[in-house]
Image 1 (cartoon, rainbow, N blue to C red):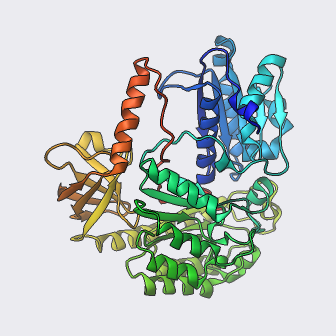
Image 2: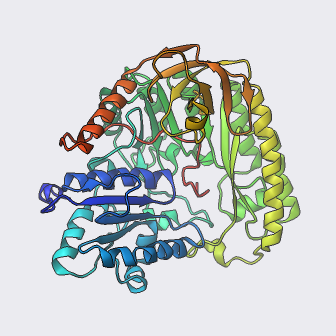
Image 3: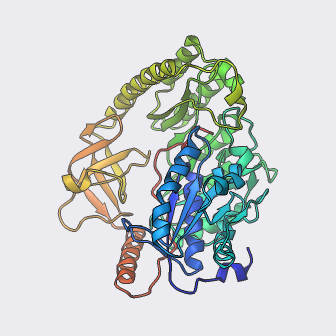
Length: 505
């Protein structure tokens, strides 16, 4: 996208809303889309507002009913568009890349369709659609510009996603992502570090390195140890307190990565590594290039180097051909690995994938029964692992919007170094701000969170808290009519979710 395109603005101030579905990569893309819209003169519609001038759907294509969900939501906008002259609707992301012309045929009220490779063109396409008064469909077949080169509007002042690569070189039979995102493209290490350093200068203290298979980083630039080197380099960034990454592939999980995690103080002892199945025969059918022994071997090495590591995973139940014995092998790995958390998925056909047409599709009732058994086993393990945290004193990075009951219970929430969710009592005096760090003693454990029922023992005010305060003041001033703009800092606080949010890694 050239500078002329990027600077193009609308004639009058118009509002926009972005609705995001799918994985962290989609969330990261939506930050870029928001930045592009604001650079073009649009303003974010207030949360809870009834409608915006432009509604952008950033879609996911990995679920069997993804298109039904999209068309249902698009249909709900028909009366709103009819009542709001000049309103525009845009559809981008993985489903747009896959369905292309179909979207406009099924939903002719859509104004713009764009793909995963050309998100930078959104403002231009909206303007073209407005002038031509007809839908604009533009799908690039290869990446036009790395998303991190585009403007960004981030939602958090204290934590940020940093993409190290896009695309995927794997051929998993259940996953359509490589066909939609393309082959892996790596950023130069210097560019990644420059973005990290810029974010830290703005107040960010936690960074999550993001890639479809993040630890495959280096394959595109010819350095098999590039990822471990990047982790160590992040350790030298002054002011960066927490480094995470998601999601690694077991195939590429090498000893030098484990060594870098253990030796770099600001790299958190937290790992999300998709398993998908514990059965060697199913892993082969999935085209997963590891087997049960290899996976458990990685877990063993991680725990030997970092005994306090919290490990989470993704698991698919009911993949075509799964037998009772296959499923028992998955339960075996779950019991051996003792995951802090597992994101479990009932297999659903992804149109365009080899698995969708495989023989041996499992009846829904069988899949449901296995799924419930797996969830019960993992819930017990998660609870047992969380109970080990009771009595420990943890540093908790205060988050914004993590605890759904916080307002009712007058408590605050945040993430421990290992990414466990912690709810804690407000300390005496001024409440800590999102981005500040509190010291809390854990008194109770549930399967999915920890609780500190006494006031925080200490509060450390941070640059990230200062940045959050500045951003909040700027937002309030803008709402009052003072045009101050939002600082481009931070990203949504990382949550222990699978990289695909869909079990695709």
